[in-house]
Length: 74
Image (cartoon, rainbow, N blue to C red; front, top):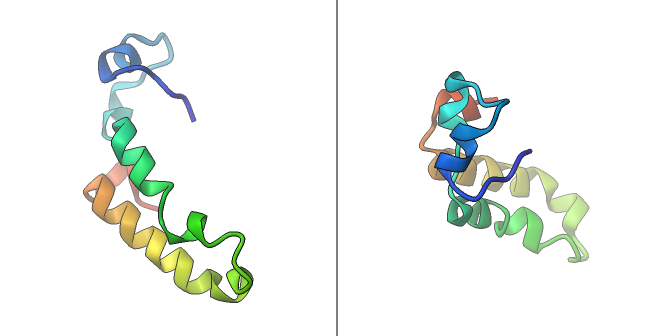
């Protein structure tokens, strides 16, 4: 993962590929994605047994945050 200051900064990067434009997320979007239940519950006593539900929640959050763009599909 590469982090950039802005979309303009990312597009000016020498390794930028136009077909990856749908992969650009704002800092707020990344923060939202990584603050979901999968990451909040890591120290909980039921983390391992809850992984299937937590992964489903992460997939739903990712779908919502990325708008279902092809770049982010599994």
